[in-house]
Image (cartoon, rainbow, N blue to C red):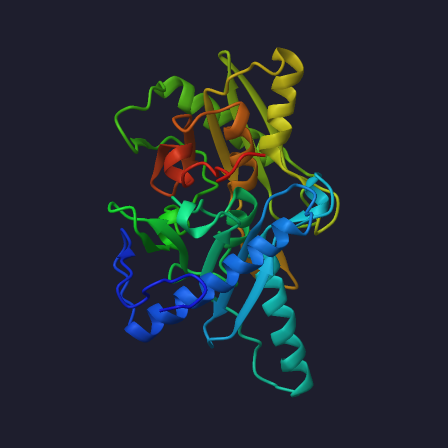
Length: 342
């Protein structure tokens, strides 16, 4: 029993749709790490963070090193904000890298995230569910360098008896298409629908694929990252397309947002996106080393879902042997919903 929160850790229910087995000792450790994150989220909220959002994360790597981090927002602009998960990841990465450097180690610096414990500033007795990582953090977690399908995300949640429980979910469940490889072959292929509710004609699908593929083949502006990506959207029976444009290796113009901006200029803020199609390279290169970053920008997909698209909006993926038509809801987890009024 923890004295501050009066939680019976031993009898706390573990809720998961995945097969996750925790020993009694591991479960107790996870709950304690979640409580640490919860306290930090409360402290950050009360300290006047400009957005008045209090989140915190306690993360663990494969060598059982832990680090805490909280969301940091010194303005309401994206460039000056960082979520708790990324804050904690950076904290642990830096501390371990400094230790690695000081010990003059010669083996490769190995850094993989095993656990992410997420908390928010809501009192525990008011907690219903903790939202999943936002699209910005999911875009980090979708890469393969520091994360894999074994990564588990924990949070507090109320069970059916309205009792505080431990929620566990594998990253592979949050990002079900994480390991699905796309193709840059634009030939005719079999169309596979992920569910029967998707209403998109073969003509519309092939038109989007063809337009996006042509743009990909003729794009000469992604020469810095060596990762060429094109995207098209269907709006009012009209296709708007754009390709990735590099400024530097670090900064680029994402094609989905670029294509959406073109449509907004013509149809205004009330437009509705009827389909999204991505085409291109899933990796970038740096000094002959390949980094699998994915073709689809989860960050951009999350942004358009909030205003110009819906969970049921079709998403077209060009795979090796087929064209997969899924939906935004199937590609991304549930919408990121704040647990308190702003």
